[in-house]
Image 1 (spheres, rainbow, N blue to C red):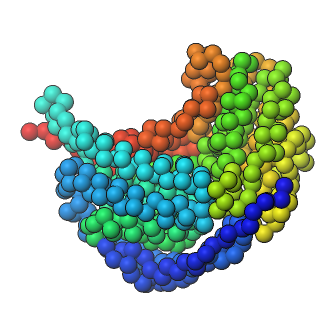
Image 2: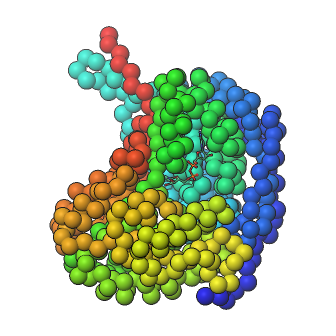
Image 3: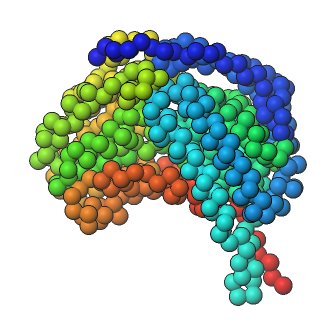
Length: 484
Ligand code: NAD
């Protein structure tokens, strides 16, 4: 599969030497520099300043000062602020598309069609939420008030660098909280643009602060800081564990959105083209780097070969290549480390006896410079194999056969995770009945679109709490009772 176009590559070197603290761009107090490389070419695309613990102290102090007045703003004042943020966000849409393509390697069409809209919807939903949300209610003669919790630390992963930061930020701001945002090291460009958006929108000094840096330094300091009221975290379970431990002595609220190994059950009457679309849209298009990717496909044994006959040609036809090309369907993995991890899992799948029916080890022909992986499908997977139990975060599908629908549901739920689930079936009532039995936070039936304003979060080891929409805002609220 040799690409029939020239790589464009990054055109401008990005240089960002400052952090955004207390309403201004400032030199880090403890500077260090991160070089970011292009996932598609391996070439350096920019240098970004990272902060240290002293910068966290400065950012938290600014957020703490700003909380005194910002938490007292009316919902109407916050609506007006969010409306200005929406205007500035729209003005920077194309800059964000380019940033996501450059730092994550997301195909430009995916950045434009999924990354940006899923972020935008968060701002629009926060505005709508504030228009009707009952911050005060009477229960009999007792007043129940919802009040801003305090300074919120927002710690995000790299795989959805617009959705996660924007979703957390606007939920916190809608609630009346002030924030210190620490993005993933691999995706700093979109985070810097988000800070520029906040500044241009006139967000008051100290209400939004950005400290780029390492999880082990900035994230750790934020998680233990006595003046931080809560941590909203999205990422891996090991990092969530460290954050929870660091946050425990100061009794912080910690919400966590973690990984998944989401099942996709094909019912006996499934339309196989619909099932293949689910795999293409939510596993392969994202290069598998989606927490809710349908990575375990659970198929009636009697239809297994029929399914593979539809799936495999579709997987082999995926246009893998330069994310800057408008026609590319699947970009590279985010980093060399991620590529190594994915290769390790493909090797494990082969060694543990799964049947490789598409893709496999190595890079697609002609794409050796970047972190490209082959879209890969394993059949004859059992649910106890490593590739069925662990999150791969790459374009690797495990196909598991079942004999009865009860067994399919049992396989779906036999996982430490419970983030999402997918059901494909021609009888809506039967598909819905199966959806009800999957223990996960978000179920998609017959390749329906995600609603990015609906509550997002997992069961079991996929997390704790919900984000986006009204449920997401409530994570940033305290409850107070007043009796008179
Ligand atoms: P990660 O846990 O390595 O890092 C996430 C963030 O935490 C980064 O900003 C990192 O710097 C920071 N961090 C790391 N160690 C820390 C520590 N000890 N203290 C404080 N902060 C720390 O995850 P990742 O590799 O960036 O992202 C991939 C993971 O995120 C996958 O498991 C994926 O499933 C998950 N994810 C979940 C959701 C969801 O909504 N459930 C969404 C996207 C990604």
